[in-house]
Amino acid sequence: MTADETFYTVTMARVHAQQGNLDEARRIYRHLLDKEPDRKDLVAALEALGTREQHRGSDTLLPLFREWLDLIFRYNKLKKLKKIQQMDEG
Image 1 (cartoon, rainbow, N blue to C red):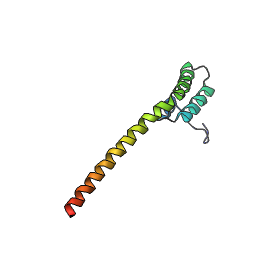
Image 2: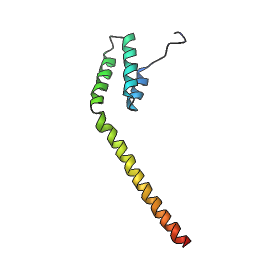
Image 3: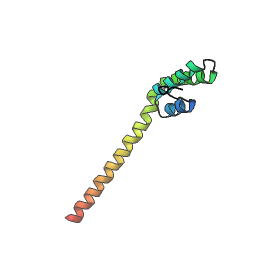
Image 4: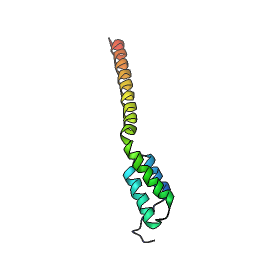
């Protein structure tokens, strides 16, 4: 292995895919397929990423909605604390 050559594994591709870094996961799978073109598991994983990309829009909305709700609850708590603080001072 040369100093310039990057070491890729299936695990790295899976982690990227789980984190939503689908482009990086695809790149790693393609790199691995270039080295071992007969690996059907890599082909299947790459195809699964294509399927996952089609459903990606709805997958990304749920975490954003949860974050939005969390921020609303935090904001309401801060408002209540501020009101209590103003009552204590007044």
